[in-house]
Length: 110
Picture 1: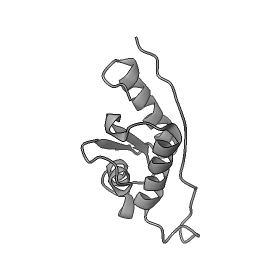
Picture 2: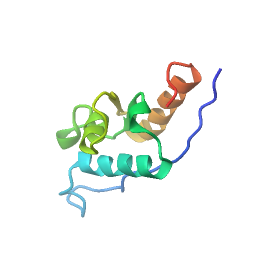
Picture 3: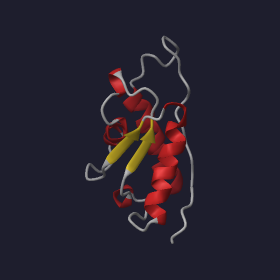
């Protein structure tokens, strides 16, 4: 079984309703995260096999597949799929586990 490694982490700031980030679209926040990861790690974004995001309350502007929307908003390759996990307080942790399972099972590399 392959081993999975976390090579870098970035997250969006925590916001609140009507707060300082309320006018920033969630896809733009996520796009900044993805752009930073690509720049910091030097990975070729075309090698990414799936974008997995954890997102609490996928409603309103972040409804649908916000992971894919963020990827596209960052100007990254449209051939890369995405999936969004909404598991309330455990969304991001579950997204990490799903990504690790893909690598460890041999179905994904990056």
